[in-house]
Length: 336
Image (cartoon, rainbow, N blue to C red; front, side, top):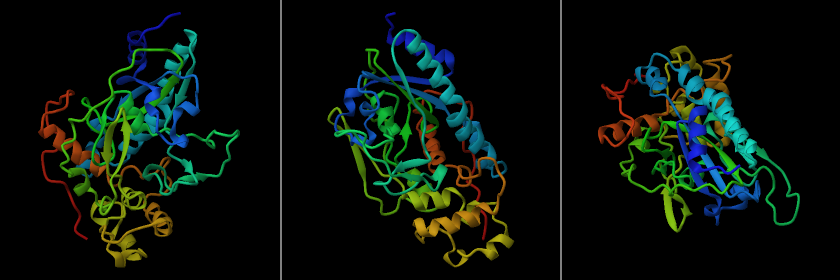
């Protein structure tokens, strides 16, 4: 059966996607092979992006300093591991029922190629794969698509200076899955700038100063450079998990006295690489053991995202409005 972009978007919204965009896979031209989705599905013509809002309310407990687990559970794990893959499968099924292939691409935070360094703060440390190409000219498996680049190509949002995607609906508060298809759907315009004004509030908010001295990066889509700065991955992971005692209420004074890192003050002025991170991770997780998914995604509470959200709301630039502002008082901080 012939299908249209309007049909696809209606189906995706009915199944639970908050955002839907369609991109032309040819716009990945120039992308390194190991990140180019055309090597996953050579016959694909389009990439469909599905966005799922992170509830602003899932960050409320962190903002108040009284409930941390709901963000990691509802704002990360439930979306990435349960809801988004289910919706992606249902949309891919609808495509295949219509006679077109649907190749779902879910978040893969736990792996990366051996050729790339660093880690993912939400799933640290990341496994590095040693694989070989199955044929000349092909990249080694697994090809891992850059979701930020894909979101821009699908017209869903722009990449802000702090290295994360911003949408006009929810600012930084969403997560994505993608579907490759051989259906020649009408693509959406590539996302352009306008949300991020370069204020660097995200960078200043980081409790580990993970953006300090980082080299700017970029990718190019349709001849336009999309520039950003990524936080140092090991520094980000260290403080994402709670290395700064001033922003970690689970680090009791007794535990802090036992810390092998106490002499560093853990303020972000000392840099943590992979060798320092591993024992730090074990120490920090001793403060909140036995959690099903850990508090990795909670302790810094996405300080960068929250600071960005505050600025976007102050500028009244987002289309999704709330009756009251997210931040109404100064951020809390422990005296240590």
